[in-house]
Image (spheres, rainbow, N blue to C red):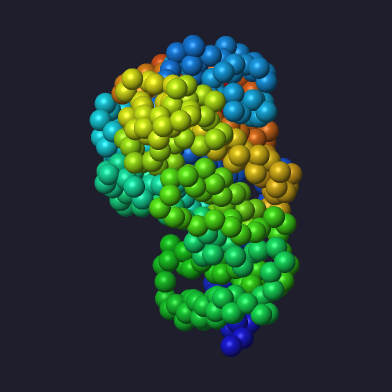
Length: 440
């Protein structure tokens, strides 16, 4: 089967779009991937979720001073795990969840907090549909999210407001989405690649049949978007050219808690590789679920912070579970926050080390990472949350600072983030204006 045999029909379709007045305003926008490469503007977004909030206060999470940060600003706070990337951080004090969907109940908070205080699609889904990706608007990845009490304990929702059940296995995600891009791959001898080739060819022909029908402008636009994505994937499958650093995570899910650390790090690599291969511009990483108490978080990297639970029999007590540790804000609870920050730091390092074939520089240069829980504090507080942003130097975010949000809400922060992508909106959810000092 030859995909090219129907190219004339596609050219006719583009000509018809021109007659409809869409070539410049719509088709050109879709097809020109580097038209704004030199603009200081965010291009990619990662939403990282962790459960149960943090131990707040100046002696724990909020040790940093307001104003300019440096490598020593975070002291022994969990944010110290990101000290090597301090210049990319905006760490907030006095950022609240009240009025933006915050709630003292975990599942109730998950209903609207991540959509700015109103029910429906969450911020990641909104942003994904607004800026779009070449193959997928969003990718969702998790670590032990499968152990959620119920869907109500999941933070993220799709375009229909339905909870997203996040896949936890890094290897399965890689096989389904990234294996065709693998470094040193040989598409001539790989039967899976050959199968994908036939699927893409079949989809192209189906698009040609649909484009021959009489369609309205919106329908034509959607078909063009799909065709561009297929053309991109066809190019990848039709050549042996690889993108440096696309390689198998080498780990799959088991029933053992001990592999949680390795799973998390593999998922951060999956996100970075997805951005490098231009599979998507938006990703979420869900570390467990709200009110989680199924996973023992006792990895070697955080045992130094776990006090009496860092060794011996107590290493395996219930206090090493997130929700159990949260209510009394035990040392294990702060240790868990150290681990979440280690995961974020690994994500930032992955993005900072990989070349950006689409926008130039490194992937991190045009990426904004929002890190947030469903609770502010471990005892269900809503004020002064443990929320922070990591952003690249071409996003328009004023990074390297501790910022006083002045009681503004997480919905206002989402509004600020949305506008770093050039959306130019005046409100998002229950936002109460922007946060002065966040962006240029």
